[in-house]
Image (cartoon, rainbow, N blue to C red):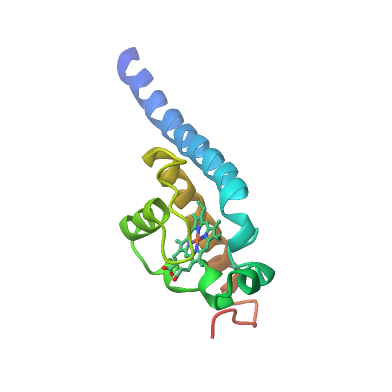
Length: 126
Ligand code: HEC
């Protein structure tokens, strides 16, 4: 194998997970700063905030609600443009930053899915 090809392979396999990790890291920080107050640490919604906003707490659950079924494109546009009581974030964050927080949200949704797998009897989302 020629060295340049090898280098290409190594870069290909190491750089992309690194970029992904960076995005997730950025996404997590943004989530903690801008989303957690309403959607809670794990995304299942903050009950006290639901009361303050006078919204149904179910709406703040972005793990088990419709948000887990909506495509990325729709979540990106909700986070950018806001939705009813939820503020728009396109003035605060670049499209890349919005993307990274949506990636992070997907990892929270996946975590919850994994916890629901057989072995644990309790179903979170009836
Ligand atoms: C001030 C409270 C508040 C903050 C802060 C907030 N949200 Fe929301 N969010 C809401 C409310 C309320 C809704 C439900 C809106 C509706 O359905 O009418 C919502 C809905 C959503 C939905 C759509 C759920 C669905 O099923 O369609 C997503 C995704 C979401 N928020 C992500 C985020 C992210 C990511 C952030 C941080 C960048 C964030 N939210 C910050 C209040 C907030």
